[in-house]
Length: 304
Image 1 (cartoon, one colour):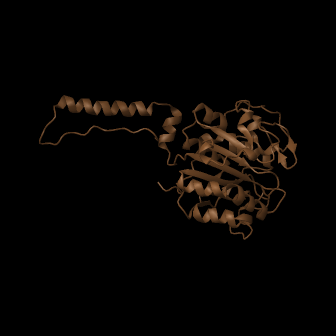
Image 2 (image 1 turned 90 degrees about the vertical axis):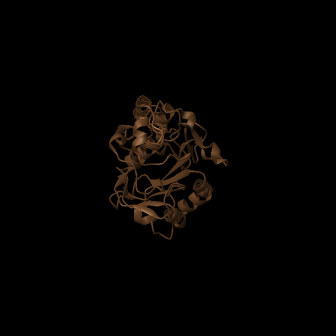
Image 3 (image 1 turned 135 degrees about the vertical axis):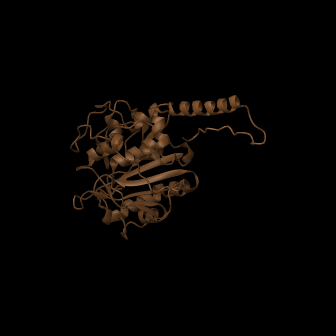
Protein backbone atom coordinates (compact mmCIF):
# COMPACT_ATOMS: atom_id res chain seq x y z
CA UNK A 1 0.00 0.00 0.00
CA UNK A 2 1.78 3.16 -1.16
CA UNK A 3 2.75 5.52 1.59
CA UNK A 4 2.34 2.98 4.38
CA UNK A 5 4.90 0.56 5.68
CA UNK A 6 4.89 -1.99 8.43
CA UNK A 7 8.08 -2.42 10.41
CA UNK A 8 8.36 -5.88 11.95
CA UNK A 9 10.39 -5.82 15.17
CA UNK A 10 13.65 -7.73 14.96
CA UNK A 11 14.49 -10.30 17.57
CA UNK A 12 17.87 -9.97 19.26
CA UNK A 13 20.66 -12.44 18.46
CA UNK A 14 20.28 -15.83 20.03
CA UNK A 15 23.37 -15.20 22.18
CA UNK A 16 21.43 -12.46 23.99
CA UNK A 17 18.05 -14.04 24.70
CA UNK A 18 15.04 -11.78 25.06
CA UNK A 19 12.42 -12.53 27.65
CA UNK A 20 9.56 -14.55 26.23
CA UNK A 21 7.11 -11.86 27.25
CA UNK A 22 8.99 -9.25 25.26
CA UNK A 23 9.01 -11.48 22.19
CA UNK A 24 5.29 -12.11 22.53
CA UNK A 25 4.63 -8.42 22.93
CA UNK A 26 6.63 -7.64 19.80
CA UNK A 27 4.76 -10.26 17.78
CA UNK A 28 1.46 -9.04 19.13
CA UNK A 29 2.30 -5.47 18.20
CA UNK A 30 3.19 -6.51 14.68
CA UNK A 31 -0.03 -8.49 14.34
CA UNK A 32 -2.07 -5.62 15.68
CA UNK A 33 -0.41 -3.23 13.26
CA UNK A 34 -1.12 -5.55 10.36
CA UNK A 35 -4.73 -5.82 11.43
CA UNK A 36 -4.99 -2.05 11.62
CA UNK A 37 -3.65 -1.68 8.09
CA UNK A 38 -6.03 -4.31 6.78
CA UNK A 39 -8.94 -2.54 8.43
CA UNK A 40 -8.40 0.88 6.89
CA UNK A 41 -11.36 0.32 4.59
CA UNK A 42 -12.51 -1.76 1.64
CA UNK A 43 -10.97 0.51 -0.99
CA UNK A 44 -7.58 0.58 0.68
CA UNK A 45 -7.57 -3.16 1.24
CA UNK A 46 -8.46 -3.77 -2.42
CA UNK A 47 -5.67 -1.43 -3.48
CA UNK A 48 -3.12 -3.27 -1.36
CA UNK A 49 -4.06 -6.53 -3.06
CA UNK A 50 -3.49 -5.34 -6.61
CA UNK A 51 -0.38 -5.52 -8.76
CA UNK A 52 -0.76 -2.11 -10.40
CA UNK A 53 1.43 0.94 -9.73
CA UNK A 54 0.33 4.28 -8.34
CA UNK A 55 1.42 6.98 -10.80
CA UNK A 56 1.66 10.57 -9.70
CA UNK A 57 -0.48 11.51 -12.71
CA UNK A 58 -2.49 9.61 -15.30
CA UNK A 59 -3.90 11.01 -18.54
CA UNK A 60 -6.40 8.93 -20.50
CA UNK A 61 -6.94 10.05 -24.10
CA UNK A 62 -9.96 8.69 -25.93
CA UNK A 63 -9.83 8.57 -29.72
CA UNK A 64 -12.62 7.50 -32.07
CA UNK A 65 -13.98 4.80 -34.31
CA UNK A 66 -10.94 2.90 -35.51
CA UNK A 67 -10.03 -0.73 -35.24
CA UNK A 68 -6.79 -2.14 -33.93
CA UNK A 69 -5.31 -2.85 -37.36
CA UNK A 70 -6.20 0.59 -38.69
CA UNK A 71 -3.80 2.11 -36.16
CA UNK A 72 -1.34 -0.41 -34.74
CA UNK A 73 1.30 -1.11 -37.36
CA UNK A 74 -0.08 1.60 -39.64
CA UNK A 75 2.29 4.06 -41.32
CA UNK A 76 -0.43 6.69 -40.77
CA UNK A 77 0.08 6.51 -37.01
CA UNK A 78 3.85 6.76 -36.40
CA UNK A 79 3.47 8.50 -33.04
CA UNK A 80 1.01 6.03 -31.52
CA UNK A 81 3.23 3.21 -32.73
CA UNK A 82 6.26 4.86 -31.11
CA UNK A 83 4.31 4.88 -27.83
CA UNK A 84 3.61 1.19 -28.38
CA UNK A 85 7.29 0.47 -28.92
CA UNK A 86 8.38 2.40 -25.86
CA UNK A 87 5.44 1.32 -23.74
CA UNK A 88 2.83 -1.41 -23.69
CA UNK A 89 0.36 -2.64 -26.29
CA UNK A 90 -2.89 -4.41 -25.40
CA UNK A 91 -3.43 -6.67 -28.38
CA UNK A 92 -6.91 -7.83 -27.33
CA UNK A 93 -8.55 -4.61 -26.18
CA UNK A 94 -12.23 -4.11 -27.00
CA UNK A 95 -14.95 -1.51 -26.95
CA UNK A 96 -18.15 -2.78 -25.39
CA UNK A 97 -20.93 -1.61 -27.67
CA UNK A 98 -21.96 0.79 -30.43
CA UNK A 99 -22.40 3.72 -30.93
CA UNK A 100 -19.92 6.06 -29.21
CA UNK A 101 -21.65 7.52 -26.18
CA UNK A 102 -22.41 4.34 -24.20
CA UNK A 103 -18.73 3.38 -24.36
CA UNK A 104 -17.70 6.65 -22.74
CA UNK A 105 -20.15 6.07 -19.88
CA UNK A 106 -18.91 2.49 -19.49
CA UNK A 107 -15.31 3.67 -19.36
CA UNK A 108 -16.12 6.36 -16.79
CA UNK A 109 -18.72 4.64 -14.62
CA UNK A 110 -18.78 0.90 -15.37
CA UNK A 111 -22.25 1.17 -16.92
CA UNK A 112 -23.96 2.85 -19.84
CA UNK A 113 -26.40 4.35 -17.29
CA UNK A 114 -29.24 3.55 -19.69
CA UNK A 115 -27.66 5.50 -22.55
CA UNK A 116 -27.87 3.51 -25.78
CA UNK A 117 -27.49 6.23 -28.42
CA UNK A 118 -25.60 9.42 -29.15
CA UNK A 119 -28.31 11.95 -28.25
CA UNK A 120 -27.42 14.82 -25.94
CA UNK A 121 -28.19 13.97 -22.31
CA UNK A 122 -29.73 16.04 -19.56
CA UNK A 123 -26.82 17.28 -17.43
CA UNK A 124 -26.60 15.60 -14.04
CA UNK A 125 -29.25 12.97 -14.83
CA UNK A 126 -27.42 10.28 -12.83
CA UNK A 127 -26.00 10.13 -9.32
CA UNK A 128 -24.38 6.72 -9.85
CA UNK A 129 -20.78 6.18 -8.69
CA UNK A 130 -18.16 6.99 -11.29
CA UNK A 131 -14.42 7.57 -11.52
CA UNK A 132 -14.72 11.28 -10.75
CA UNK A 133 -16.92 10.84 -7.67
CA UNK A 134 -14.82 7.92 -6.42
CA UNK A 135 -11.57 9.86 -6.69
CA UNK A 136 -13.09 12.81 -4.84
CA UNK A 137 -14.37 10.52 -2.06
CA UNK A 138 -10.86 9.04 -1.73
CA UNK A 139 -9.29 12.49 -1.43
CA UNK A 140 -7.75 12.34 -4.91
CA UNK A 141 -8.00 14.85 -7.72
CA UNK A 142 -9.85 14.52 -11.02
CA UNK A 143 -10.37 16.65 -14.11
CA UNK A 144 -10.97 16.59 -17.85
CA UNK A 145 -9.58 18.67 -20.71
CA UNK A 146 -11.92 18.92 -23.67
CA UNK A 147 -10.90 20.33 -27.02
CA UNK A 148 -13.34 22.90 -28.44
CA UNK A 149 -15.46 22.98 -25.27
CA UNK A 150 -16.83 26.55 -25.40
CA UNK A 151 -15.97 27.33 -21.77
CA UNK A 152 -15.07 25.54 -18.55
CA UNK A 153 -18.08 23.59 -17.30
CA UNK A 154 -20.24 24.28 -20.36
CA UNK A 155 -22.93 21.60 -20.75
CA UNK A 156 -23.84 22.59 -24.29
CA UNK A 157 -24.65 19.69 -26.61
CA UNK A 158 -22.37 20.76 -29.45
CA UNK A 159 -20.22 23.64 -30.59
CA UNK A 160 -18.27 23.44 -33.82
CA UNK A 161 -16.28 20.21 -33.58
CA UNK A 162 -17.12 19.73 -29.90
CA UNK A 163 -19.65 17.03 -28.95
CA UNK A 164 -21.06 16.51 -25.46
CA UNK A 165 -21.58 12.79 -26.23
CA UNK A 166 -17.85 12.29 -25.63
CA UNK A 167 -17.96 13.88 -22.16
CA UNK A 168 -19.77 11.51 -19.79
CA UNK A 169 -18.88 13.50 -16.64
CA UNK A 170 -21.63 15.98 -17.52
CA UNK A 171 -24.17 13.22 -17.00
CA UNK A 172 -23.42 12.93 -13.27
CA UNK A 173 -24.74 15.18 -10.51
CA UNK A 174 -21.87 14.06 -8.23
CA UNK A 175 -19.14 15.42 -10.53
CA UNK A 176 -18.70 19.22 -10.53
CA UNK A 177 -19.13 20.67 -14.00
CA UNK A 178 -16.17 22.93 -13.20
CA UNK A 179 -13.90 19.87 -13.34
CA UNK A 180 -14.43 19.88 -17.12
CA UNK A 181 -11.95 22.36 -18.55
CA UNK A 182 -11.19 23.49 -22.06
CA UNK A 183 -8.09 22.08 -23.67
CA UNK A 184 -6.69 25.61 -23.72
CA UNK A 185 -6.46 25.20 -19.93
CA UNK A 186 -4.23 22.15 -20.21
CA UNK A 187 -1.16 23.09 -18.13
CA UNK A 188 2.40 23.37 -19.32
CA UNK A 189 3.51 22.54 -15.76
CA UNK A 190 2.44 18.92 -15.61
CA UNK A 191 2.90 18.74 -11.85
CA UNK A 192 -0.28 20.83 -11.58
CA UNK A 193 -2.39 18.21 -13.36
CA UNK A 194 -5.00 16.30 -11.36
CA UNK A 195 -3.96 12.81 -10.37
CA UNK A 196 -6.33 11.45 -13.01
CA UNK A 197 -7.33 13.37 -16.14
CA UNK A 198 -9.22 12.54 -19.30
CA UNK A 199 -8.30 14.38 -22.49
CA UNK A 200 -10.99 14.41 -25.17
CA UNK A 201 -9.98 15.75 -28.59
CA UNK A 202 -12.65 17.26 -30.83
CA UNK A 203 -14.36 15.42 -33.68
CA UNK A 204 -11.50 16.05 -36.08
CA UNK A 205 -8.55 15.53 -33.76
CA UNK A 206 -9.97 12.25 -32.40
CA UNK A 207 -10.09 10.66 -35.92
CA UNK A 208 -13.93 10.68 -36.01
CA UNK A 209 -14.23 13.18 -38.86
CA UNK A 210 -10.58 13.35 -39.89
CA UNK A 211 -7.86 10.87 -40.76
CA UNK A 212 -5.75 8.58 -38.61
CA UNK A 213 -2.77 10.72 -39.55
CA UNK A 214 -4.51 13.88 -38.34
CA UNK A 215 -5.29 12.34 -34.95
CA UNK A 216 -1.84 10.85 -34.60
CA UNK A 217 -0.22 14.22 -35.31
CA UNK A 218 -2.55 15.93 -32.82
CA UNK A 219 -1.47 13.48 -30.11
CA UNK A 220 2.21 14.08 -30.82
CA UNK A 221 1.87 17.85 -30.91
CA UNK A 222 -0.36 18.20 -27.86
CA UNK A 223 0.60 15.31 -25.56
CA UNK A 224 4.03 14.24 -26.77
CA UNK A 225 5.78 16.48 -24.25
CA UNK A 226 3.66 15.05 -21.44
CA UNK A 227 4.47 11.49 -22.55
CA UNK A 228 8.19 12.25 -22.49
CA UNK A 229 7.83 13.86 -19.06
CA UNK A 230 5.80 10.91 -17.74
CA UNK A 231 8.74 8.60 -18.38
CA UNK A 232 10.86 10.39 -15.78
CA UNK A 233 8.15 11.61 -13.39
CA UNK A 234 6.29 8.45 -12.34
CA UNK A 235 3.33 9.25 -14.57
CA UNK A 236 1.27 7.49 -17.21
CA UNK A 237 -0.38 8.13 -20.58
CA UNK A 238 -3.17 5.83 -21.78
CA UNK A 239 -4.33 6.13 -25.39
CA UNK A 240 -7.48 4.18 -26.19
CA UNK A 241 -10.52 4.31 -28.46
CA UNK A 242 -14.24 4.30 -27.79
CA UNK A 243 -15.15 1.70 -30.45
CA UNK A 244 -13.90 0.29 -33.73
CA UNK A 245 -15.23 1.00 -37.24
CA UNK A 246 -17.91 -1.70 -36.80
CA UNK A 247 -15.90 -4.05 -38.99
CA UNK A 248 -13.49 -5.75 -36.58
CA UNK A 249 -15.52 -7.15 -33.68
CA UNK A 250 -14.98 -3.90 -31.72
CA UNK A 251 -11.27 -4.61 -31.28
CA UNK A 252 -9.56 -1.29 -30.57
CA UNK A 253 -6.05 0.05 -30.00
CA UNK A 254 -5.02 0.63 -26.38
CA UNK A 255 -1.47 1.73 -25.63
CA UNK A 256 0.08 2.65 -22.26
CA UNK A 257 3.27 4.65 -21.85
CA UNK A 258 5.08 5.87 -18.75
CA UNK A 259 7.73 5.31 -16.15
CA UNK A 260 6.28 2.12 -14.68
CA UNK A 261 5.34 0.55 -18.01
CA UNK A 262 7.79 -2.05 -19.29
CA UNK A 263 9.05 -0.83 -22.69
CA UNK A 264 8.04 -3.07 -25.57
CA UNK A 265 5.67 -5.10 -23.43
CA UNK A 266 2.30 -6.39 -24.61
CA UNK A 267 -0.61 -8.36 -23.29
CA UNK A 268 -2.89 -10.69 -25.22
CA UNK A 269 -5.35 -10.90 -22.32
CA UNK A 270 -8.81 -9.76 -23.38
CA UNK A 271 -9.61 -6.38 -21.84
CA UNK A 272 -12.36 -3.80 -22.31
CA UNK A 273 -13.37 -0.41 -20.88
CA UNK A 274 -14.32 -1.96 -17.54
CA UNK A 275 -10.77 -3.28 -17.10
CA UNK A 276 -9.31 0.16 -17.80
CA UNK A 277 -11.67 1.71 -15.25
CA UNK A 278 -10.87 -0.98 -12.66
CA UNK A 279 -7.14 -0.41 -13.15
CA UNK A 280 -7.48 3.35 -12.61
CA UNK A 281 -9.58 2.76 -9.50
CA UNK A 282 -7.07 0.33 -8.03
CA UNK A 283 -4.17 2.64 -8.78
CA UNK A 284 -5.69 5.11 -6.33
CA UNK A 285 -7.46 2.81 -3.90
CA UNK A 286 -11.03 3.87 -4.69
CA UNK A 287 -14.21 1.85 -4.63
CA UNK A 288 -15.39 0.21 -7.86
CA UNK A 289 -18.16 1.55 -10.07
CA UNK A 290 -20.65 -0.65 -11.85
CA UNK A 291 -19.15 -3.53 -13.81
CA UNK A 292 -15.63 -2.52 -12.84
CA UNK A 293 -16.34 -4.31 -9.54
CA UNK A 294 -16.11 -7.68 -11.30
CA UNK A 295 -13.42 -6.72 -13.83
CA UNK A 296 -9.73 -7.55 -13.49
CA UNK A 297 -6.81 -5.14 -13.49
CA UNK A 298 -4.56 -4.75 -16.49
CA UNK A 299 -1.43 -6.68 -15.51
CA UNK A 300 1.72 -8.11 -17.04
CA UNK A 301 2.98 -4.81 -18.44
CA UNK A 302 4.34 -3.06 -15.34
CA UNK A 303 8.00 -2.82 -14.38
CA UNK A 304 7.65 -3.49 -10.65
